[in-house]
Amino acid sequence: AQKITQTQPGMFVQEKEAVTLDCTYDTSDPSYGLFWYKQPSSGEMIFLIYQGSYDQQNATEGRYSLNFQKARKSANLVISASQLGDSAMYFCAMREVLKTSYDKVIFGPGTSLSVIP
Amino acid sequence: EAGVAQSPRYKIIEKRQSVAFWCNPISGHATLYWYQQILGQGPKLLIQFQNNGVVDDSQLPKDRFSAERLKGVDSTLKIQPAKLEDSAVYLCASSLGEGNLNTEAFFGQGTRLTVV
Image 1 (spheres, each protein chain N blue to C red):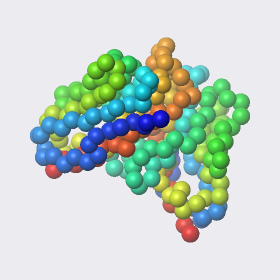
Image 2: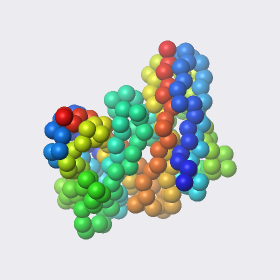
Image 3: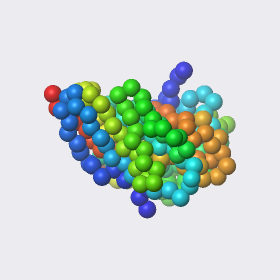
């Protein structure tokens, strides 16, 4: 069963505008972590931001913020003031602790973001 | 600190041949992951090690894929024999493990495999 859903295969945004990339997840575990990664055309996976299931506040890292709605099981990434270098694939990922000291990280299908000058 | 190292970066082989990939994780990271990323898709977890033990290999095609992590450090992933559908990028990642939820996985640059 799909545990991470990213419903937007492709998105376009004007340079300097904000954009929201959607992510919903499915877990029955009360303790989990949510991550966003960026993958440019060069292929490396770059960590952007983390949100823990028990965190009371939404995570922020520079121009990146995570809109965490626990009851809805959504963890949308907001990129403010988009730049041309933000054009890339973006993956939502979830870490679950399945057993003591054993965790698993799974990824969504990704969203391709294109920033238009 | 040094990142996750993978080699080779690129590999082209004919179907039914064998191939091996190597990964050296970040020092001190207990957990090592191998992911397969087919073009246009998200990474799919093939196998996960905690130190030198396998904790998840549920999506590893065991009739042709094998992996080991000797001494809980370096790891190799092997495909024998390769099929056309194995063409993908193979990503190695590592993390602190030990149930640390809030530590991200660090990725290597990947090995791009083309099977012709």
